[in-house]
Image (spheres, rainbow, N blue to C red):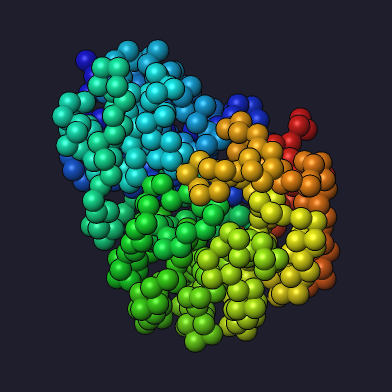
Length: 481
């Protein structure tokens, strides 16, 4: 007999476990599945129970999944997937059903919210999908036993031959009402998880999400999960969350994985006041937009422990940027980057290559723009038109698009703009990275990490082969033995 009050939550790897140790994304950055940890904590608070298996952190997890299925006999298995991990997520549901007949497969995540009814229409292995936030929808689904789903917002389900959607929730959950994520259900936490190298001063470190949604509507962003909402934790909740992470888990540095950490200025100021007046001896990173930060706030953030700030530059070509992003102002962005450096905070630029409308000239402008700024680190992703993003709808009008889900991980040029070949984009991609790394100021910054982030250098040296393989080929997963 299955346990109707228990669910097994899975974060799939997305490819074969044998390739995991050669995957540069795992070597460089291993983030906990905070969404699943939040759902698990919420369910436990409501008197239900959950286990989590993070296959991305522990690639050889099939046996662990089988073990939990046999021991706990959950009535549900919930899998949170991205576009690139969707196929692996279906495989895991098939594994669960072969091991435990009668178990119901649930899928969620941005990819699922973007496709809605199409997932069940094309994938008989999946019984339900969750659209939008998962906490209340999963609880409602488990309580219902699969009946009366029309009254539970956020569920796609089958009714005979029909696939139906119960509708969006009218109001998002109040974030301060949520318990802290169930970190204890993540095997090996916190030591298993690592922020990107040279992106933190101390270990152990961790990620934290203090808001949901984004008030902007850029062409390349999928807003299917939170739609047009933007909500955030209060400063007091945020401070208590960090205090819990420090006292319970010994965390010394936090990366706020928010799209817009400083959008609500008063919240940030109140949080910084608490960190200054009641020090936790913790540092933090965050991401901001130029419109929502200034030198006064930056100095206060520095005093509160801000160690690094990331900004979405996307492209250094003003015309291309204006096509894809609201409030495109490269001069303002440059001024704010200089303000960040003046405040004594490390700066990271986030860019994309291969946007619709990209040209060789726009790439040259991006390279020149980055070279003109005091950026310490940067991340250059390969533009990927994900389902749910505005640009996805007519992407083939602007170039060729290989919609193989397994390749849609921002590490492959699945979209090639008119006027390019994939080979040419790869060459320019390598040149862009090389032009940044060869700058003396960047090299000196990395040398300074010997005493500013010694753990980063240790990880870099231990995984030197994987990093060199990526530099040579720009392939996410190395073919080296």
